[in-house]
Image (cartoon, rainbow, N blue to C red; front, side):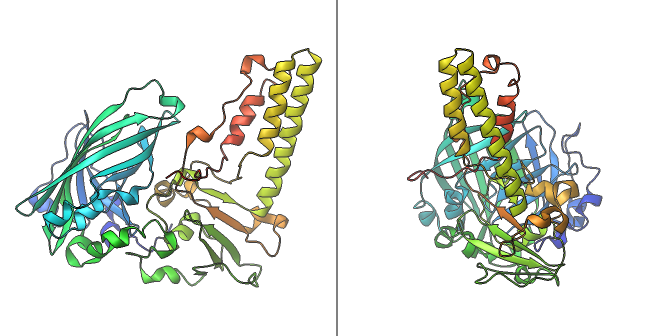
Length: 455
């Protein structure tokens, strides 16, 4: 669970902040002395109808920050203070597509109000939310206005969120009104306060700086990394080294990786492991370890995009792929048997649907994975969410010229790509009553790809 960017400021954060309840009965209010004694950056946060809580900065991923509560809830923000993900709340924001294009980055970086007002005035993005285990998607469209008052830059953002997924089809569009405040210090504007709509379930979050992150104050890293020109490269994982420690190329004595694929399969000892990471922009990285690493070790060593859809992370191996293909063939045969049963029973229409379903299933873009609904934040906190990649698991199924494991990252998710099952549960005959349940389990491994021309 080691990270190349674990902050010194958060080394003892968990033990020091246990008495601050995220949804406690009373608002957290630190005295000036308590704030001065804090050894880590911190913010107040408050959701509607909840008490104000304290969150501390746990991880800096170069382009985003993970803030952790005493109860291990996590709020991930961009460097602008925009919330782009939550973890372990009753409902969660799972993904903000194309979050690198947020005009806040340009506005924050602009040295003058005149330049800030020249930044892109609007932004359209697709957000994915989770509530009671169900994902929903919303198209969010907003416009921006900016003004400077003394040393404070104020951004007002207004727009709408429109449901686009089947789970939210009955919902009405929602009006959005956000405010962000940035304070000028050392020629850098840092986020100090915001009132922002997060999702239909979480509604509005108020956020206020308690103790500034020292990186905003001590150097120009943020000014450089939020530069408008560089921001376009942030989504290009292979080029995104902003804020990453030099140690990422030598994370430990038992890990080595390069920013490209090996030209020839590496010669490995029995203890070494070869892992390939396929990043969300299509580039790939090969890693060789002398031991059995955990997923977080590998991901912390390789720069990734801000807008990765972490629940779509796939962790596979040649051995698992072979097993999965065998199961797919078994399911295909069962669907063909279902079609034959319908024909035998004189239900020609249902037989045709079952045949079409079988053929579609066989060509579905399914990618097997040892884990589903992965969370980088949870993996950093809980070993049970941070699996150990091990030799025993890949077994004899590995081919010598292939990596032991492949980790695939995605920055795209579109629930409308998931097909609706054409045969209702009550239409399934005896002996096939669990077919739809099995198909839904297979759909957990759907590998979403961006449609040509869609952004």
